[in-house]
Image 1 (spheres, helix red, strand yellow):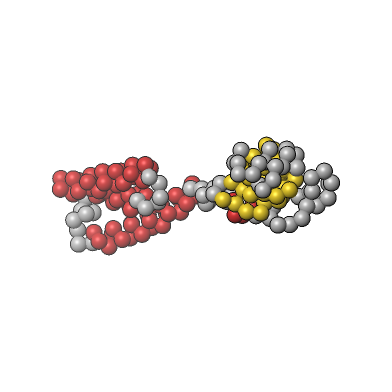
Image 2: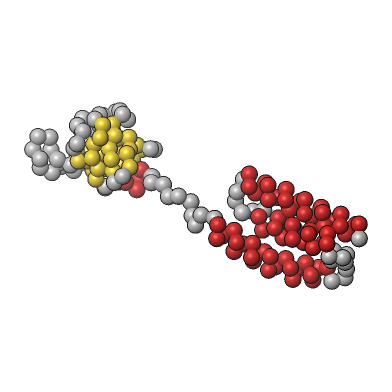
Length: 160
């Protein structure tokens, strides 16, 4: 009984350590086996003959499989469905925006608002605040834009 209690305690401690490691670096790699080890460890500690009988492997499977399935279901219910989406500059090509800070050639100090996001911007020409622009390219975390209207005319600008 002492050896079985000790082995159950070892399973329990290993399971708890695995859960702590999982909490420190989430990725769902250790949560399921840790939970199974904790349950089997507790059963080994308090159910006499559970770990050292001829039926132990079969009992471990009969208990381990449902616990694995339940644990996977339980953790999936509380985990976020997917990582938050981020917008990359290339996905903005051909979208329109409005200049919120003066855009200058060869400078990333210019800003444009595209939908609800603000992006650093550059252009081949100076584009003042309030002008509508079209995204024609991206480099890293900034976009390359061109004016949608010709300066001072209010007419659509030409394409490059």
